[in-house]
Length: 276
Image (tube, rainbow, N blue to C red):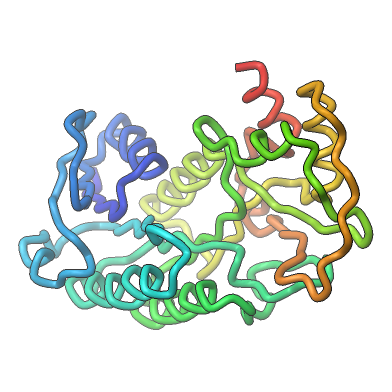
């Protein structure tokens, strides 16, 4: 049995925790405000931006999952999480191996080319630069730390594109503006897959890109969604020049390790949402 700490035990973290508990592991979830329904998770109340609140943490976890999102898109919010908060965690638990949940926003590619774990991370947006800096500190902190970069998460309760599709959206068609996504169930499943690899002492790479098998132009995605929803088709918008981000995410490293996506493309995932 392993003892695992999940910092930022939100929707994805809770589902990971429940599955780990079912496998026989002990899970502690760190949150500022623990939920009333705990599902077998032992909660530790703390705010990672306040170092004093972390003092009571057990120092003997087998693995730490850092699954924390900034509360908004402001520079201050990203600084609080990825500078102050992460530094406090790494200082408090310097010898605990960490899975750091990152984002494919770390890439600066804006021409639609493919990117993988070894591609340059030179984003234009300052918020993404905070995440790059955080990745670098996590990698330097412990040789067994692993970075996991999720692309755009969708699924139950995440209706952003479905909402946009209802209102005849303006979408860039030429040149193609690629989007990358991962169903939230694949977020959970891929994390469990990697955790079990680590706990069984199988070697892991320092970084994995977790995105489904089918990067697709936003025009294609919106055209498909509006057709499925019987809504007016999208209208063509002028190209953003230069684009802030335009890339196709290559997930081959994760698949080579043996992971199989439950939702290999947006069609499987959104079709299920629409049916529900």
